[in-house]
Amino acid sequence: MQVLYWNKLTDIEKSNSLKRCKLINNEEIVANVKQIIGNVRKYGDRALQEYTERFDKVLITNLHVTKSEIDEALRLEDKYKNAIISAIDNIRAYHTKTKPNQFSFENDGINLGKMYRPIDKVGLYIPGGSAPLVSTLLMLAVPAIVAGCKTKVLLTPPNRYGQIDRAILFAAHYLGIEHIYKVGGAQAIAAMAFGTETIPKVHKIFGPGNCYVTEAKIQVLNSDALVAIDMPAGPSEVLVIADCNSNSNFIASDLLAQAEHDPAAQVIFVTNDVNLVDKVLDDIKEQLYDLSRKDIIQSALEHSKILIVDNINQAFEVSNLYAPEHLIIHLDNAIDYLDLIDNAGSVFLGRYTPESVGDYASGPNHVLPTYGYAHMYSGLDTIHFMKAISFQSFTADALKRISTTVGNLAILENLDAHRRAVSIRLKNLK
Image 1 (tube, rainbow, N blue to C red):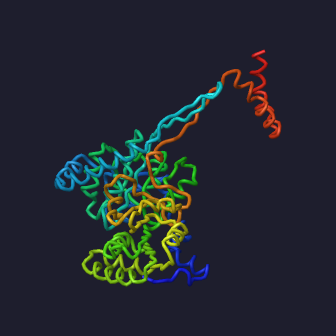
Image 2: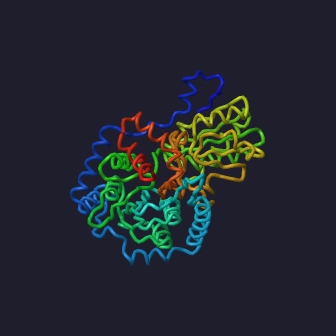
Image 3: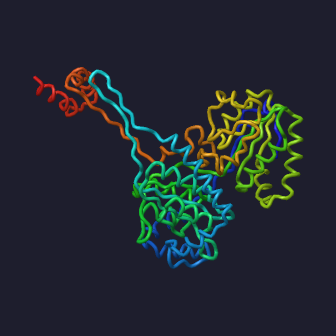
């Protein structure tokens, strides 16, 4: 990790120190994804099978997960079943609490309000790769259920044996998800956006993925598919703030935990204590020794930074500039610093709140804005699986009172029919 003194950097150097890895978005990827989407639209299931054979190295004759595959998943060891169920309970409790409620208020003959309705059909994409991300399924499916979405379509790539991980299938079955398909990559996004003979079209697509998946989400969003997506996505990241009272072992473990996600992941450590830096670097070396994904971690650490600031307030200024996906505060009375936070996906307060608890089981969603999008996006929540619909009602007297305002604004905009829609009612009252 590169160590930098914040106040010795020029403005350009400060900006460069907070840059993420460049997202892969070259012309070749854009063209390939466009071709995949076009073929899925044209050939449907056949294209999905061919792409699965090409990219996942397995021929799938039946895209839909069968009952026998579900039955096999139910043999998952009890300790893992219990962990999944416990996490579901916590995630459901949190997302039920954050579910928005209909409201209305009346003021002198005018009744205004807002009601919330679930998105009818949602697509849940769970990436494959080196780790079965059952936690991502929970973070997508549970709020969809709490919101009341009727149709939940789950797509995830098969392994080389043509199977989906048992933990994912158990969790999906436990949550009552019936539409489960063995499809991954850009072709899975295309299938959910446009529908095929087997896979239903959805109204909104959720879930992370590689650069092809991300590009596919962007392309279907800007197509005639009439489909929405959850949020922009990039590699995972964390920023840790600590001082002389912080535990270097805890800090090192948090940095390593985030770095093991992806070679392109980024970890930032900000402190006002120079002596703490060497301790953390030593602890990283020691803890890294027996980790199974150390090659991935080392790649991530190569483009990660340690920033030394003058004081803790400045540490929060740096954090707000970076707008991290995860912000961990290793300070005494960490909750007292909440007012200093403007930009972050999710915040972890105190030395006994590792980011791992948020990834798996505490309750708040772990699908969060990355790549600086925390400047303007929020993490996933129940509301993202719903639509807000405003409503209003006027009495005749209330319409009279607002008619001059509406009429004059309509004149300014040259919209005579708008003005008449009010005046015709006032004439009727006379």
